[in-house]
Amino acid sequence: MSRVGKRTIAVAAAVQIQLRDRTVSVKGPKGELAFEWHPAMGVSFDEATRTIVVTRPDDTRQSRALHGLTRAIIANMVQGVQTPFEKKLEILGVGYQATLAGKVLSLQVGYANTIKLDVPDDVQVECPSQTLVIVRSVNKHSCGQFAANVRRVRPPEPYKGKGIRYQDEVVRRKAGKAFGS
Image 1 (spheres, rainbow, N blue to C red):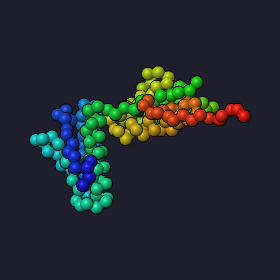
Image 2 (image 1 turned 45 degrees about the vertical axis):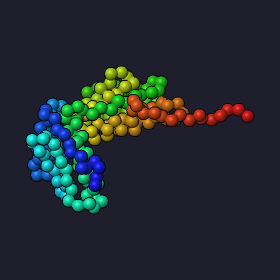
Image 3 (image 1 turned 90 degrees about the horizontal axis):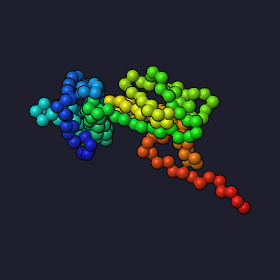
Image 4 (image 1 turned 90 degrees about the vertical axis):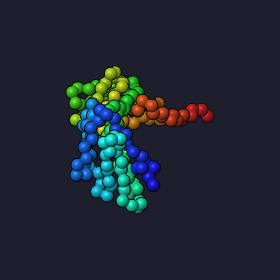
């Protein structure tokens, strides 16, 4: 049995759940999300205990995979509408900086031109300093994908450590060329 899929999802009192035509809608104090689950899965919401249960029809490999996936996506939705997901990115390097103008994030990270990234509608971006970018969203996928897109512009390199990295990321450093005879 799927270890993730068989766990129930506890729903807080501030969160409203609606199940309709294979679609779950989650509304909370920070936002609203909707998800259409796979037709083979079963999702039920118990109003008395305020829990969501995901069930599967059989023990095939695909059903087991979809069971855990469906439960994880719904659990992330319930969590996200209460407290939005957040990713912090650090920019390291001489002259490397980020600026935010409306819904466009501009990155100057050692290229001849400035890299401009359009911020999606369901994502909020902050630049408290020129070397820190904070990405927030109620949708975990959108938050992680936009943070990955920003990091992909200039990933951290192993020799000097310059580039864009997650705040808690550890970059393994290499020694480089050894000079001497």
